[in-house]
Length: 91
Image (cartoon, rainbow, N blue to C red; front, side):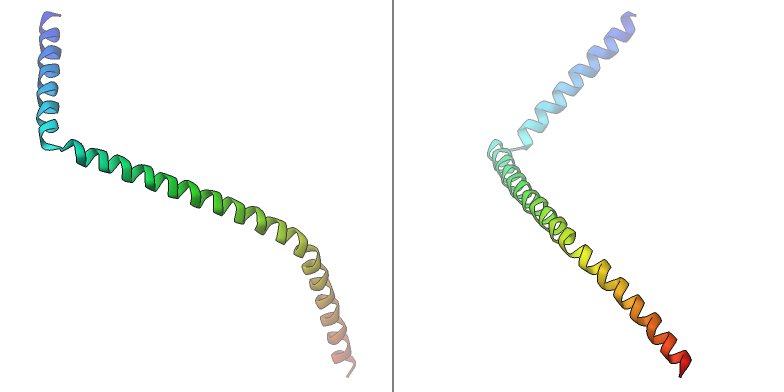
């Protein structure tokens, strides 16, 4: 048990030392500017998401209005085709 605790303690000390050394490599101003840029990008992505959601709702509404006309016109075209096929056969 004691050996495991020593290993855990040495790993903890090593990780603390590594994190301390990493802190010296990174400038705090750079981190702040990265955070600021990430917040800007997040805001833009949220705005884009809202616009796309609105567009999808609008498209769904337009499709609901047009789909009945489209299906009616499709039936009419099929009927006209069958009539023309019948006329062609008779000729």
